[in-house]
Length: 148
Image: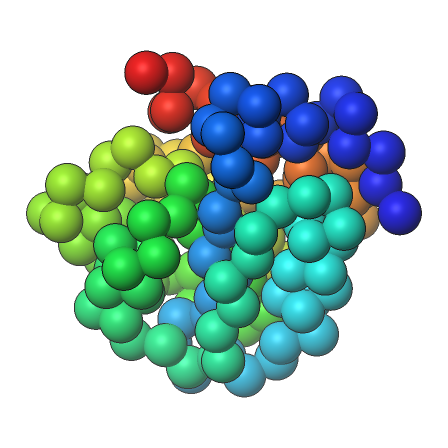
């Protein structure tokens, strides 16, 4: 169990509710072990997690983010589906969801990270990222975007 005293408790107090995170996979990547693991420890840390099945279309993710009023979207990529994320970022911006933090986790080559951050991705987590690093970073990103 993750100690949430320094991570999501303060954020929960600020928001007046648990932070909401959509954890999903876009494209044709069906490997969901990592996304299920991350969803579980985000829940353990006190976040409300909306978890979807793999193979989501970009439009579906944007609609889910709006319908669920999420604070963040986590995209898991084991194959090359992180290459679809710039299109997702454009769709998020078109839907005026630029206050929603988008993070990517999984197998992302280092040389492709700058393209993701240039597209608006707030953080990229590689294999070996600790639970605490992911929870702390996500909490900080949500707090920054929900400053009002």
